[in-house]
Image (cartoon, rainbow, N blue to C red; front, side):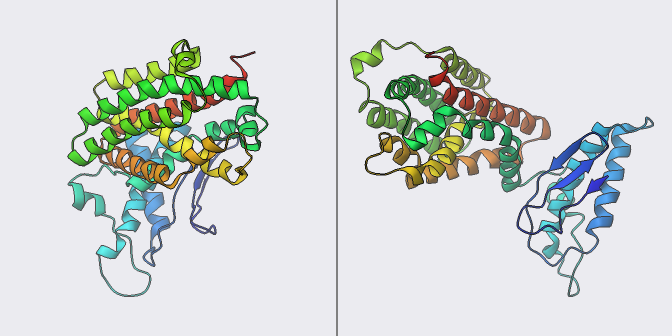
Length: 325
């Protein structure tokens, strides 16, 4: 059974494919338009067409149905978004069934950057929930974290940021436009500046010089290095994005706990800073635009790189209270 979410309240309108054992959710954002006439018939017809093209003469599996719904939903979303282009009649008008065909001269639907962002963020909700529940994050927020654990974390973060800055520089070299080159180059400088401003105030240079990367730090850096060595700009920037997005998200939500006497106020202020929020928004815009204009296999590889980095971020936050035991 396919349960549609269009009549739910709010701007989130997920659909769900349900059988006796599983539920597969398909996230979506509401498009505010009166032109929704025929959406149900169009959606069901598109799903049926996609299932037939995927399954052929075999009985369709649940995977066939799921993939068909995902593809049909992308097509329907684009058709609704461009419904105003028709400019026909009055009242509740029809959707623009041929929006993608007219734009790209083909039948393959591409998501918008906003849809990519919403889909990727939704895809790592389990990782984000796990991160929120980590003892390190909770203690960092309420100020009860032991200083030794925080300093250990900062030392590893300093090592991480040095190589992260190098990968940002690689992204700048691979970027196809001067605007993107400038952004990633400025971000590389910002990563080093953050190390100098925040980390140096807690850790002496001679102490940091003797610190070795933990297994968690090494695994994350190896993942980024592999993305950089691939020469694939999309995969690399997707792998770099969680360090912006998850840090800004955690910092923004923990910042209300900050106060003058909070022992870790400098960290809370750094990652809730408006300038960092603006940089994060720009990084999201660049990466999701690259993904939205890529072909489906490339977009899939980007999504995999993004999720893998998000998992490394979670492990990085968990490590201070595990590695030191």
